[in-house]
Length: 118
Image 1 (cartoon, one colour):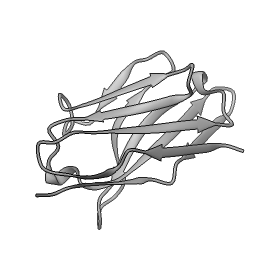
Image 2 (cartoon, one colour; image 1 turned 60 degrees about the horizontal axis):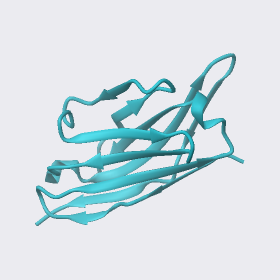
Image 3 (cartoon, one colour; image 1 turned 90 degrees about the vertical axis):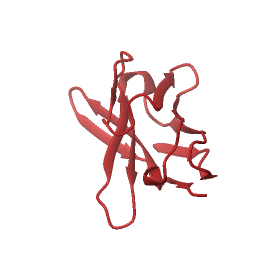
């Protein structure tokens, strides 16, 4: 059974920092591209950052220079360090695992709320 379990969400003031973590089980983690997506109320889910199985990273323009995605294949975790948070970063953040090899497998976590407010 595949599980992606996010943690680390919460409420923070503008300019603050949070670190999200996603623990994966039931997949061959090192073969998967991992990503963080977010969905604000009334908006579509959008990409925040991804990291390939080889460690290549990709960021949405809105978070470049503020967020950093990293992975630990030994622990089967992917983290998102979020600095200089803005109110517009408020959303539910979702962890994603994607495999595009001989078959296509894609999994989502349950989400964790991030609220940036003074």
